[in-house]
Image 1 (cartoon, rainbow, N blue to C red):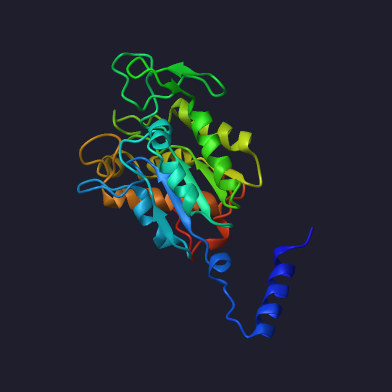
Image 2: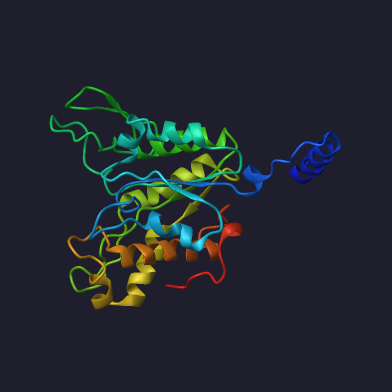
Length: 264
């Protein structure tokens, strides 16, 4: 197989011979796209999602496409994964992080349009409200991941952030099922196109280190959404996990700013 570096040198030589300008921006400066819910999205005071702070810690542009209240299912049905698919180019990186809004059952007449079909494979359900076919969390995440990889992009499947693990006064690091589902999705799609970051465990370790009082101060109104300071720390935990190869190497590691934050 001819390496990219070989092709690049050949391309430079050809362009130089023709007197044409050389376009390096796409390969030299890929873009990171973020797909997720309110814990990642740009929101309003007193809350903020961690995606708004990622650019502080990496050297390449970040486009935050996370939307509040979305699940893997609703993000798919609204065409938001398809929107990112139209934008991505070779070597871009897409971070997918859902889970907070994916629970429940779609079978009820009061289906909220977000709940995924239970299971991790090819299981299907029918919405009790609309009659639509509903797929599993893994189906939605894996289908989107493969669509990005088909265009030459790389995917990082990230587990959801934890709720306030000190909420009861006792540290409770129990992970919801979607954390394991995210890891499975990355494995099913497979390397080198897909990798996994256990953001839940990284932030949990950070909360343990911070302790009860400092962690509780990061959650001004509920146990899910952090204030801006908390969102910044959650972004730092993600970057630290990437730098540590916490769940294996991801394509983002080569773009981390130095010094890399250490929060757990």
